[in-house]
Amino acid sequence: MASRTADPVDVVIEAEFDKLDLDHDGQLEWSDYETLIDRYRQTAGVGEDDRRIRELRAFYQMHWMELLRHAQVEGHHLSKGQFVGATRLASSDTSRINVAQVGGHVIFDLVDADGDGEISHEELGRYLQGVWQIDQSDANFSFDALDANKDGRISRAEFVDGIQEVLTPNR
Image 1 (tube, rainbow, N blue to C red):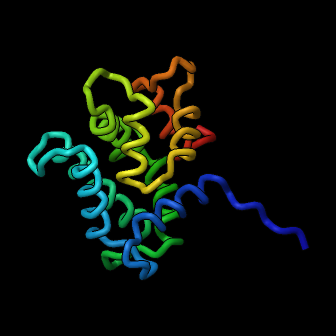
Image 2 (cartoon, one colour):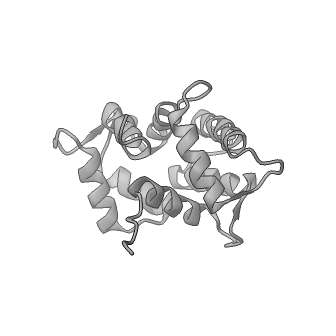
């Protein structure tokens, strides 16, 4: 019997689930996103009332509600399987929120620490380590993948397009 190759998008979404499920109970809930938002805040070195954190919170609140809607759950928890399915659906259903576009722009504003309109190697590395606990070699790989024109900087368009490509590679 032939083994089934894992879908690369599912692998990425499952890894996101694992990073978000801090208590390792196999379920995500809104408090896991609150922790994620706090990681962004700490990594950016800004306060709770910073406009970019408020925008991030608003984005994740809407995204969370879309995940629950797409998973068609009664409660407020998502299993890994529900999260993967709902993330795929929410990423392709732009009728209420375009996850890659809105999330990409909101996150870009936090990663671009010096506000010059581009993300440097250092800025992306700090973000990936601080928020997602990704090591430097993986951060370098991510930078190279996002820097589409290979100019040593990631523009806003490259960042948003990169998120879109990961979430919906066959668009």
